[in-house]
Length: 94
Image 1 (cartoon, rainbow, N blue to C red):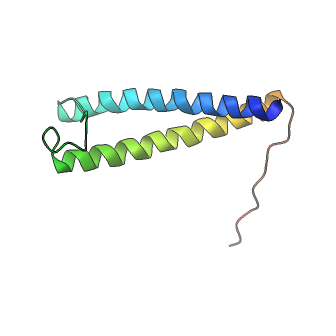
Image 2 (image 1 turned 90 degrees about the horizontal axis):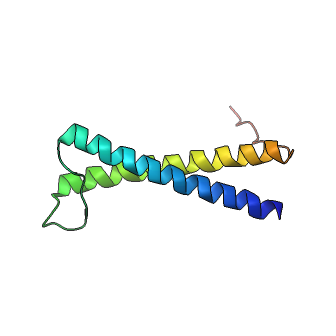
């Protein structure tokens, strides 16, 4: 049951983070460019290539980062609330 709760928390946190970052990205795009963000970056009729590439790269990177951070924070929260030891990563050899 514990693993199911942990997975649910991680997934829920990732979804919320992706939605919030998506909203911030759309707002930021409007502030920077003065235009709405591309609705369909794949459609050459509505979006030029440069905008499609920039939108895809920035949104993909930031949403992906937000999902990773949210899942990690949810795992930390779960570990503390369930009194589980956090997984440690071995130190990198220098």
